[in-house]
Amino acid sequence: EGAAFRPQADYAIDDPEVEKIAPLLIHNADSSQHSALIDVMEGRNIVIEGPPGTGKSQTITNAIANLLAAGKNIPFLAEKHAALDTGE
Image (cartoon, rainbow, N blue to C red; front, side, top):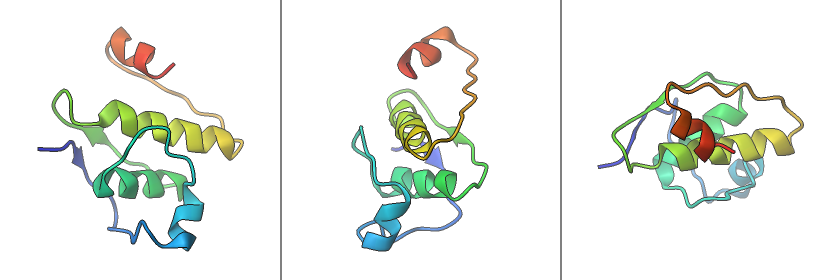
């Protein structure tokens, strides 16, 4: 089904207080992807893994957008060059 996101917790993503933590969604996100994004914005280190086509790149791009909007620097590493192109 979806990528293997292992968020610390499930968040009430429609809660305005939770929404303030990661206000930018430049790609659609399901609840597990959104929870992973909240974990990133709260400073947790996470691993996003899964088969092709499960939303990993969209989740990472949403995280990068929110981190940049928050004034953070983001190191981005990938095994394959195609992943780096997606992250641009």
